[in-house]
Length: 381
Image (cartoon, rainbow, N blue to C red):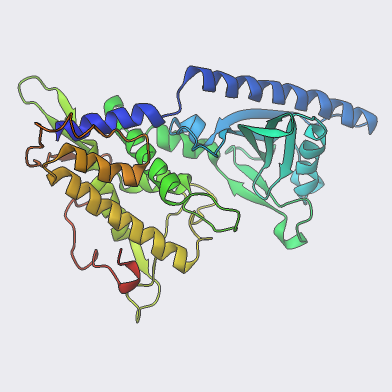
């Protein structure tokens, strides 16, 4: 058990995104981009002989929550930034022109590729015409001056979206960030919460590699919100020293079981056709996985179950090499695997299940219902 915990901690150190160089680069690029945006918007509105709209910026997403992971080989370092403008909705009922301000102000730099997407404006950085693994997502909001509750509205729509697809959607990004940050009283409990999210995000990246086919994959944000609802801390407390020992494998297993329990049958006559519904705990209260097709959801559920089986097997596997090798197939090349020579004289002791400490008042059972986990023919490995 201790060996697996050490392996997961080593794995976490390799995949976590808190490298000072990368973080400083992201911050630097963010600050430069915001400076350029303010300057160019001022010039743009001066030409129209109109006062430029003021805006405030704030970090959001995994960067702000501290749950970021190192990107895969073909992935990007990214930072999500919210921009909320002090404008009146009645003057801009269509949010796309507001997004177009940002798009046009930032377009034209040979080192940037700017794309206006439905939820944000994304700046991809490149050098000599090739991507250099950095991107900044700018989410555009307006803050209603007449509102006292600080509610924001997110600009949704692309440059050529149909009228009905152009909306200001009520959103509470700051309230959501506060919920995540205030989710734990104990700092070490919060650290385990973040580690488990990072494990699953890397697992997701390995098991669901991005493609150009337009397939909607499980989102890291969805896993984070699911953890907010159903993650439970797993630790044991020494009654003499009051020292806590954390068990990430047990916490990860319990979380996966909790996720499996949350799959809801959408057809009462077909018990295998079910979906995982994870709604934001703040406005707009949308289901983060709603765009996944039923077949994609089946694949997601099957892979979660296989991951659970591998974790259980790894705990009881007497050969450390075999255990780590199985886990590396799930989590990717950064999961440590000792050589067979290093483990020739070593073996795991039988796993001892540690006690669990609930992260919130909401409790999640750590037992596994065999019927709930029974695989359909489509889900068989």
